Image (cartoon, rainbow, N blue to C red; front, side, top):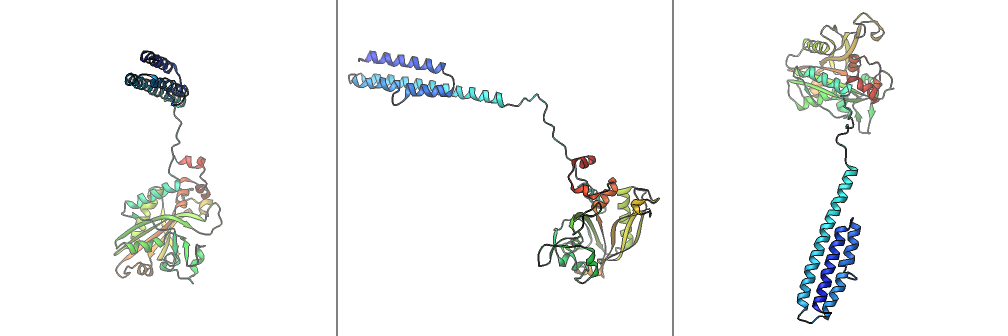
Length: 347
């Protein structure tokens, strides 16, 4: 075989390969052509290159240059065809998987604050106008902070009021009220103190329409020089009017709590009958919404505050109780069921 004949075969190979590559569709077809034309073993170009050995020595460099030129041209055409095949495959995939942006979107449900969360926020808003700052305390307390520092020693009969859930043998317990927050705030802050302490509480209760083993309270504490029952009455009157209406009647009546002295219950005119008397208020015309009183001197001492110089008042309320009265809800179990039919009513 001479130089001209081999060169002509190489150029015919190039033309045929370029024509086949231009007509091929899909990466599998291109892969087959790659093996057929450029494969190291059995490829058409490899077979033609074996003919170079039969040429005279002076012709081999010129033919080798032609081989390199043709190989580069075919490999370039193969790479371009593969890129085009990938682009076509991607376009088909995108067309198949793409979203129709002109179609209506899927509706996203708009949530609302839970009535308990909303009630806590409203209570904090009312007392925040009088300088009360919201604090958080732990849900697991010790016997010392939950009882003893609140003037409730181990043998005190008032402990029967709390069905306590203990978590270990060292006195750790799930807090039965938010009152331990009083001690924590007094240790952390110096008078004057105006603190609001919302949080979850736990007691071993039989669950019914008015009792639960898990519930929310909001504790309030004010400590300053010259603080009196008049200050307490004024604050609670403003709170009652803000939550239940400016014309709502309010009253103090005697109560008992170990950590306050004197202690009172704070009542409002019945929201169901407007004070005329109904089964909801036991025909009295009044509903109790919280307990309060002047902070006991022993509690101030446990909080590191001199009771001779400072006086304070405290109050505590059940958030579920306030929410039930505000919205006319008759069963507190509804707050824990996550029933959207119930929650959607507060949108």
